[in-house]
Image (cartoon, rainbow, N blue to C red; front, side):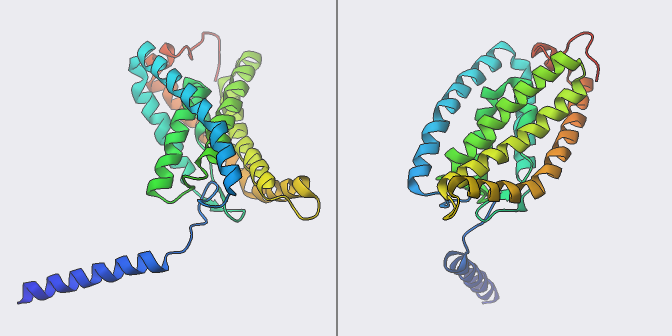
Length: 254
């Protein structure tokens, strides 16, 4: 009798919990651009823009794992680094929020096209498991965080490394600018979708970019410093993998 009563109470509690979750859940104003926030036309547009980069990245990912299979653990590290950092959300503009992106490290290690796949998978898991971002807005979020950010990181890293021969400066600038550029693109995406009644796209972009900048600039600096620490750790403990990726050069200093 007692066992039946306990089971009944558990079943009743679970039923009430499920009912509350289904009937009283509020829309998530979560990180990235939230699910359902963009108009349908922009949803389709950003998916169409993002998909070719993702397919290109799949091909690059296959080439990297075949050419240097010993770097698979490093690939997992780059994905986990992006997942953890981009899950640290700080409320910002309505329908989105600020957070580190973590895509710079993977772009410097494996190239921007590979990072498009890792970043896209991170966004997919966050949309499905954490209600961060969304499936309809994954194309837009993927383009800003997993395409533009990694390409900026890759270009800045190789340019500064070639000019200064100092890896620390190149890694810091690449990670920080990838972070900032992601939010510039997000501001553009929001301004295109929601132009201001007075001033149109320019006024809306100024509003979104200004609001993001308050939180994003210190976050970008922090991400740059953290990425330098991780890079130095890899230089010590993963030198074989970095050599396989042609990221160890004689004469370069930290």
